[in-house]
Image (tube, rainbow, N blue to C red; front, side, top):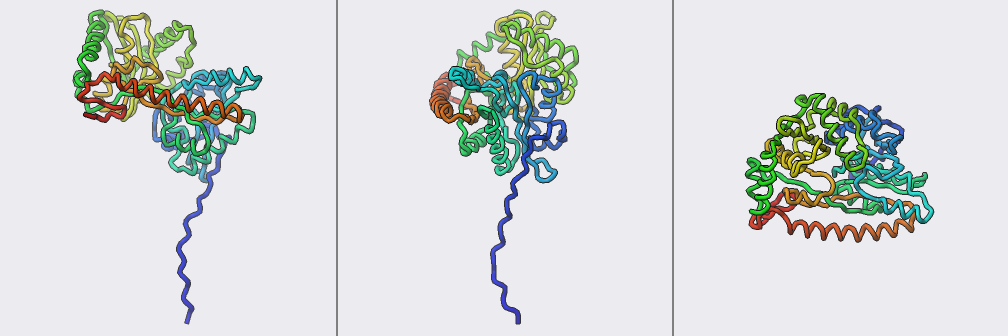
Length: 399
């Protein structure tokens, strides 16, 4: 007779640490594998990053050296981090020029630094790409480990709330910013949207739109294959002209926009403005089924109210027509509030290698978060929506 076998609980599976690599270029990764991991978000897509790299908009000669981290389970891509070594702070929209100047005044070197971001694109979302928290933690730990190799700091820009908490748990500093987003409350049309406004703000927008019509300004919206090479050339002329008018140089090239049109064309919205039948201005946005991201714009001539119509009202009308839930209007701009875009907090993560500077910057970030929270409270009190149908930044209605 055999002795009874003692009962034992099955052992839980042993978590296997992913293999983190820094020697796999994006061009070596299949677009399908990357995009599936990134949730098929157009601005995190293989095609978008590839266009930035191939056209040399984000390249060593422009101060953006790709150092992407990837996580692997044998031959399967399970995580990624779009990481760059930076020699300046341009094109980030989370401003740390004061930090760099403090380093300089104390005889220290702030650059190079490491930045996890979508270059030139202040769009909130994941920057540690992957569903598994263990994988994301391993990617972040590897990036933090790079601070031992001559980098002053690590910055994870416009990350989402969950990953902001994960970064804080890893000892990084959270820095808050401010953007303005529009939410679709199942509006039937633009008039229905304006119907939620208080009388004065509704009247002002109607006046802005009417004055443009009286000035002979009309608009056409195009998507995908409707956007021709001539349309793109005109858009770039306007985009470049507007940058030059502000004594600045555009970050992106005509070649970049041509390449994106060829790979992500179905996610592009081009708004073309005409005055008395002659092309006047253009705005280029990116969208998917859920979100429209306001991105680039330019004009040949200044016309009062033109920017608001091309960049906001046309985008909102498009979202209503397509049933798109959210329109992210980009960085900064308190003027967006009166157009129905409400304030939301954005988050970035920062690790500073120098302990003394880290302490001072942590204090600054803590005070700045309080200021941002107060600003949001104050801005919400100036909402254009009727008091009997107040709407918060998530699109919820409160009586």
